[in-house]
Image 1: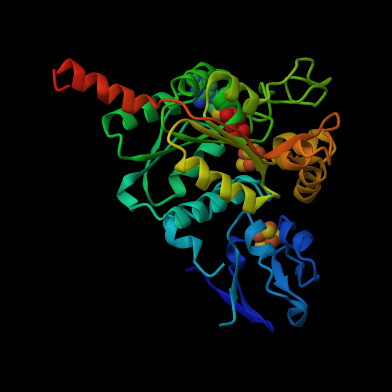
Image 2: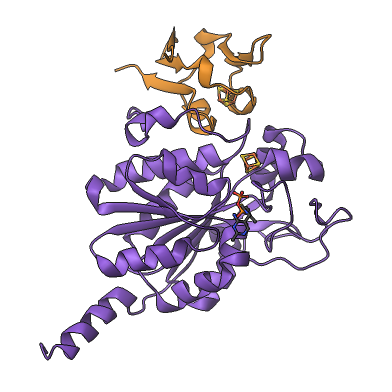
Length: 73
Length: 272
Ligand SMILES: Cc1ncc(C[n+]2csc(CCOP(=O)(O)OP(=O)(O)O)c2C)c(N)n1
Ligand code: SF4
Ligand code: SF4
């Protein structure tokens, strides 16, 4: 079963599918606000949720569909 | 980005087989976004691919898809389109697939101006078979079959398609996502042969050998070396050695093949 981790940020929810992350670092490099980082096992994690501006760059750059940015209504 | 791209995938086939950081997943996503915006009825869309890492893309999409043989995606697509011209037929090919073994099919599909939308995943290498050079490997770049660097001139597949008669030709990269999505949408709406080159990155078989160890190095290379065609045309930018243009590169109008073929059928039946 795929687990979805939800991280609340001021402007959105960052939904993360850790099991699908291959640790390529593309989202970390793309994020203009250093919201994301790789953990010790090389999987994506949200480190500074409060800085997220909901730009969606991580979602559109992740080749593995591991991140989804759901903007606040 | 509120819609869930997963609605367009055969989710049981995921995660996909591509290497960490491979650009193919990015193109696949952009294509799914384009399909969402085009909003064609699902059973009117057919996606045909050849063989290669890139051609695996077809199998992940929840549409009628055909994974054919190396270099022959266009002949299959041509048959499908002729059998039912109402279908919206997309063709996914790698750079080797479309320009080496399938190069002849490519120029003739363009020459006929058959209403297909070809998306070329150009990673400059034969990814699936371990990194042999392709006709799109740039000069001096290394491949397993060019350990001292490629000595041949490479094709510019967009100019090749334009010269052969394609009526819509554009290029984007995995960095320029939104452009890629837009080109796919506009190419699909062009009534004739459309070719969209998606410059992508293969960290495993190309980047490692060519001084770009990480996927983000490769994406940065795209960002730094892609020059918008509009700026070039306006005299505000120039294309330096090793750089390439992106955007809508060419468009013209010409009779479309399946329509001309249907007219012939009518004439032969004396219906005209
Ligand atoms: C007729 C035939 N010849 C050769 C092959 C071996 N083969 C499989 S994939 C491939 C090339 C893949 O390169 P490309 O088309 O650029 O796609 P990529 O894997 O880089 O996405 C080749 C030569 C084959 N499957 N069939
Ligand atoms: S881009 Fe996707 S696969 Fe790569 S590190 Fe980020 S979440 Fe993981
Ligand atoms: S070999 Fe290259 S093209 Fe194939 S999946 Fe790996 S990174 Fe992608």
